[in-house]
Picture (cartoon, helix red, strand yellow):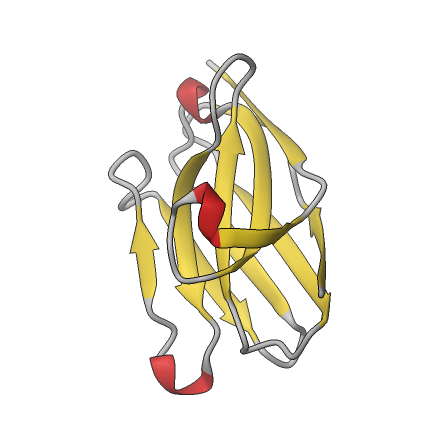
Length: 124
């Protein structure tokens, strides 16, 4: 089992930046991928980025088209923490952001463990 705790959400202006953190505990960090998802009221969760934490994966990453070039996902094994650096924020990035542990994917059903979510609000 994996426990995940997100932090770093908040309010930012359009064009600004925020960094989200996702700290894991439980199962060995490196046994799973970390994905970041976001959800707005009335819609399903959108996978925005994922990273493989497996040691020999060279930190393989994937980004959805909606965030490519603006968001960067990274992982620190020593801190058992994954990050989502968000720059050039847009109003449409406003959502609750969740990190999840599971298979290397941006498909919600590929992830078994989820954090509690952190709100990101971008004002235009």
